[in-house]
Each structure stands twice: as C-alpha cells, then as structure tokens.
Length: 170
View 1 (cartoon, rainbow, N blue to C red):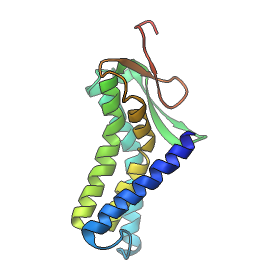
View 2: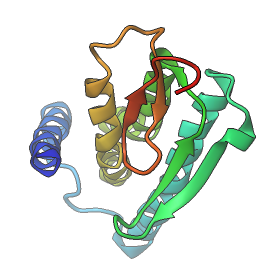
View 3: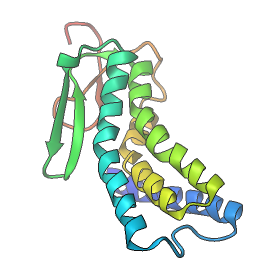
View 4: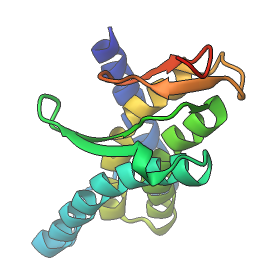
C-alpha cells in the first residue's frame, strides 16, 4: 500500500511542479540544456544533496528538539539503497514534523521555486529529485497530522516511521 501511495504522490508531484514550471516559463523543464558540463553539475548537486538531506533531519532533531548529537545515528539501508538518520530519543510531534519537513522544503521546494523564477531546467532537476527523495518524509507528516503538537513520538527502531510514546519509560 505504501508503495502505491508513493507512486500516486510521485505522479501528482511531478504533474504539479512541471505544470507550474510550464505555466510560468512557457516551456517544459529539461528541454535544451547546457550540455554535459551542466548536467555533471546537476548530478554533483544531487550527490551532495542526498547526505545533506539526512544532516538537515539531524540538525532539526538537535536544534529544535534539544536531542544530543550522541542520540543521532546515521546509517545506510542497503536493501533500500538509501541513507537514513535515526533519533534514539522521543521528541514532540512538532519537532518531528519540523525534522521531517526541513529537507524537502530547503532542498526541494526552494530550488524548484528559484528554478521556476529564473527559468533554470537544471536547478529544476536538482530540486525535483531532492523533493522526490522527501516523499517518505511527507508521508510521516501525513501520518502525524492527527496528533497534537506536544505528543511525544520516537523513530521506530527498525522501520521507517515513528511510534507514539505513552510514557518516558516506553
């Protein structure tokens, strides 16, 4: 079910951001381009953006949630071929939402907006890929939408997502 939702959200996201770019600039992104050098830079920015995505999650846990750096674990899921960050301490839903949203907004939405304003297909590609990388974070925002901001949650120990903490002993 989660995979199907990911495909649906990904398709809706693609139609939305490409549509806004087209309406604003009068053409589709990624048409034409600056040749190989420009695309090498795009790939480089995406390569830097992926670990930066995880660092932004960690920074939000630490600076917004007051989590100690020692309670943040960075890893790589070989099965999913994806890096991850895991917070070992419970945090408020407010903190969790900020930590979930920060990478998608800063590395996806902002570059897409700038790309649209300045008509840059290559910056569009960077923002688009990094926004797609944040789709699972968007799912966490949706899953937490009915929870009060002060409710404590904690990253699940072995799966993507969180568990609701009912007491400090949990």
